[in-house]
Image (cartoon, rainbow, N blue to C red; front, side):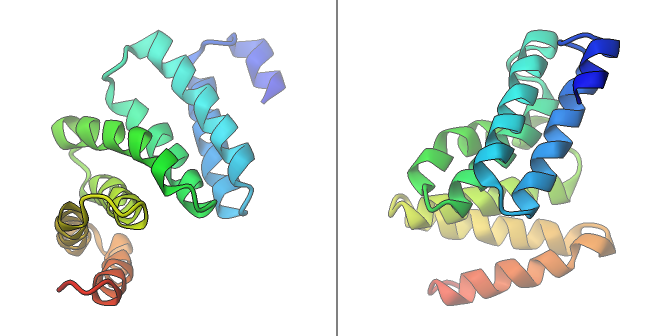
Length: 154
């Protein structure tokens, strides 16, 4: 990424995309603190370039929240996930992206013992969105189903 930074400039939107993608990979590898740092770099760059409410910000915000969840810091996950959901509810046409944030926020609310009724609603919305999403994302509906059934909701 340092080579890209030199070629594109520190605030180029493509570099922010690379940081966000890198965060996804690091989260998948279980390197959540590093993932969060990468997402935070993407977020800072896009906020400067695109403004505080741009649709692209929802990706690193969700990634930050997911990294906190994976570390067992559900309370820390709430602020970025709430912000990401607000952006995705108003600007995101892709159902699976909305569902990703809804489900992450549902888990964060549940695990932090806050607004469990809202957590159930968000999980149900995520399940519905995944079911209506393209076939490659429909298997995620099963993950949400399992979570819902494991947490006393239907």
